[in-house]
Length: 421
Image 1 (tube, rainbow, N blue to C red):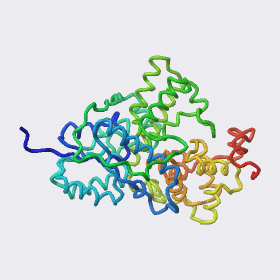
Image 2: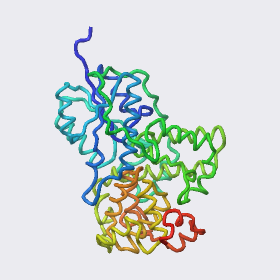
Image 3: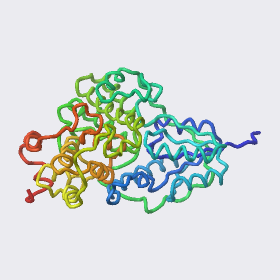
Image 4: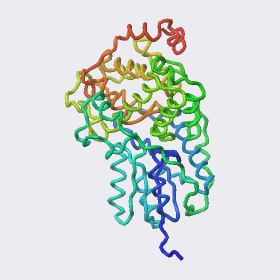
């Protein structure tokens, strides 16, 4: 009879799923009883000093839905999610000592806060075994054909070195989980919300299968991806990738499955190409850490811009002199989403036409975007501001030309601006 009971605590952060969650699986296989934790408001702890408002209700709603869906999946396996609304370090530290936790698990993430918070717990709980595998990116650090400090300075040389690497298959969800340490409580009523899109692992899987196998929309992805306002023009998988309802490895292997069954073309490759862009920025953040938030970026060259509250507010509210920008910003505020093309246009306008400090634009996106990813968001803003990974530097979009190309009949502007143009 076993006398030494092992107790695991798993902190769900950017991995709100059970399928392809290697850290969670590994922890479960090593413990007798398990505590699953989610810290409410954790994402608010991540926001930097440039944020000038609160996280949007649309973003919060999607996150709540994702958390509730995870809790429901855990309850089907006689587990549950313990919801905490206190600062993460003190709450987790208290749980470790209260329940004599022997094993602690949390998925590896390149974020500055994510790494510091785990290291702080590691320092304060030396008696605990920590487990942290890579589930948020396509590759682990040991997969990369170079040392992290030798990460290429721009995307293309990175892509050429990694795009042919073998990518691990997603790991299956465990059929059985360790016992819960205490009986499951009721689900917090304040989390029961509805939104414009549905969060959660099941919703993510449904969107992935629909976009590929249900509609064949992926076959036209390269041609349609720049559309400003059409749900089917792109996969929209970033919504679920951002908080980990879906793993990027699952997306990759589903694309490969599609290619085997229905054939490959430029568009199926291009969706993988976009996953590689996401991947590049994850390692960009892992390497540069806090420099991702510096005004001078990784280039250490301060741009000729500054913060002006009135101009910034007009941009946020979609009240600039550029209708295409205004339409994009209204779309963001009302839907929590903006196309990749739209993000490039409004960021270019922010930096070049309005001459504003790019960090405030990045922080506003952090508050508003349902699919906010710290590495992709801040990395792309550095790129547009000329202080990041763009080899050409200070890229500027001709807004009139972009409008003529992507909204020639003013359909997008009419929808979001009406008679205000």
